[in-house]
Image (tube, rainbow, N blue to C red; front, side, top):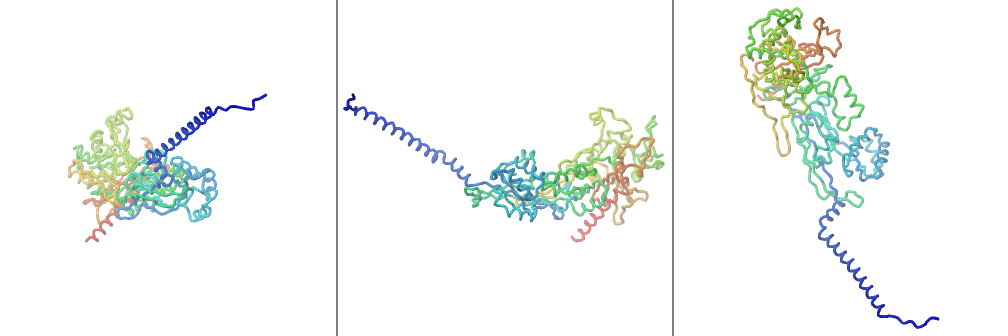
Length: 618
């Protein structure tokens, strides 16, 4: 039986209740203090940080790429410009399924697989919030197709951009160069802030050498966006600084004359203004159209250029290395006069071959039956090999190397282009270091006629010729005349003033012989002689392969690619030199009949323009 009367302990209950109230109040107070502390942190301590985050969610920084500088020739004709074009660009972070979007775009606009692959490579190198082009130079039809379905492609849009264009195509490809998409290696070395928003960079030629001037400085815009990330307002902007415009020393009319004159032959022509070092002509044939490289050349087209036997991507004027042949003879003759190894009247009999003492081997002359008695002047005019075999042996390889080195043979010219080859000027030391062999007398003989190990570039030949015409004052070739921006003008580099110590009488004697090469009755280049002025020149023929002692070279019976190269150097007017020219025609055979007429056309046109300019000034 239970007791229906229960006695309660009110005091104990009150204590329990009070303790619970105190605990609850303490918990609430603790939470309130935590909330207040957090508010103080957010509003005071972390205000700047969170305000910046909030701003970043509302404000996007968009790079403003600069306009690339324009390239002009010496007369102000545009060689490289920027034309408006539409591009299809994607921002990966705004696209849920990038692969699916690319597949839909490919089907819609008939985009090749290789272009999709190229975009994916570009996209991997960039931040996910960066706009990366998929298509450049969209046609009106492509723009219309995409515009109709634009709402179904978030993160994809059409942008108006300026695209590089080269109006003269293959005519200036090797000297002006081209821009192409920035690759992974370049991306690692480029300043991120300056190239953010830029997809192209100079790859070769002037475009590469003067990239820092042509590119300009990138600006930026602060753009306010809504919750969906769409731009609603421009808050602030720093304008980009456009790239500098560059005027080249090149004369595009002369360039075209030289390129066309080469015709079906591969080769190069370089023309230099003697007093200034301005490069008037820098032609390498065959060339290629640089415009497809700007928006992405197809793999098939690029492979065709690479695998072509004619090597259109190879810059022969800058990098082509050839035996100079008889074009070296005026310099060897001058060395003979300077070192007293011969004089202008010294005569030697040429029977059609030359033999070293106590040796049976015959070093042949190009004229099998010989030239008879030759002095230095006649030897240059008729290009007598035997005379120069003997002179080379008398000079010795050490003196020849020392003298030719002064004219820049075997060294880079210093032209403002990247990738120049230095050629080869052989010496005892070179052969010992590179081949671990001694130097032989027979090698001295063939060096004296521009064969053997000696290799020169067309640019080197033109520079040496200009230096000779300038009476030993060293000419350094340059392509940039001036750089112009909104803030400054930078003139082209000045000549060093360096001069080779030479006797004027000796130079005059060599010049007389070179004049007779063109204007003499027996000159090898007499077909380009002019009545209004005199041209001083020297023809050359360089062997592509060695002909054995008992064999005969027959041009008609050998493969075209094995035929001799044709060379010619010249300056004019002979008594007041203004222009120096060097021409190399691969497998052209004869310098007098093939290379000389090309130089003649360049000289005639240039001196005609100079005369007309003078008349206008008067």
